[in-house]
Amino acid sequence: MARISQKRLQAALLRVSSATTVNDKGRALEDFACFLFPHIPGVEIAERNALNTFQTEEVDVALWNSRHGRGLYFLPNLLLVEAKNWSNPCGSQEVSYFVNRLRNRGCDHGILLATSGITGNGADLTQAHFEIASALQSGIRIIVVMPAEIQSIRRSEELATLLKRKLCQLVVSGTTIP
Image 1 (cartoon, rainbow, N blue to C red):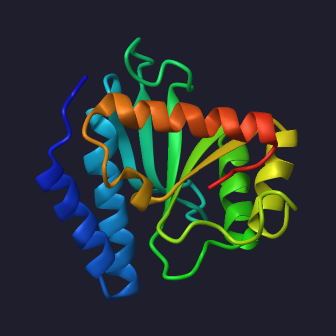
Image 2: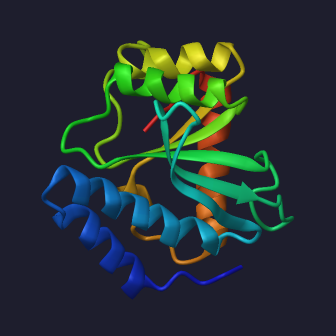
């Protein structure tokens, strides 16, 4: 498995946390995703900031996953990543919008990279947790990842294991658990 440079990882995380404008915040978290995910064997950036034909929906980052045996073999070939670099948790409206974008593109898995997590309580299925549980019932799986969960990762295998664990928790519990 590929080694992830702690120096580069911490520098990318610093850019995420120190960005000040809305555009800079979004770009910094997208840059972080584009830095991080290609460390996983078989994963590459397919598209970034791509609009649909009608220019009504934007995909922050699209990952191509060749399902390498030491990578994300348990996830589909195409993964969409939504980046939310907000000081507050991502709400149900934004989660619902991401679910809709996945559905409109025929995708059944997505990664929500949210610096402050999501709103609500997973045990009670309130707010954004409700949207994730509802999406799961229709076959759409949203894996929520916070950059803080990644800050100590040193190898791509650890990142793949984190995603696998979060996917298992999602399916078993019916929602995302921090």
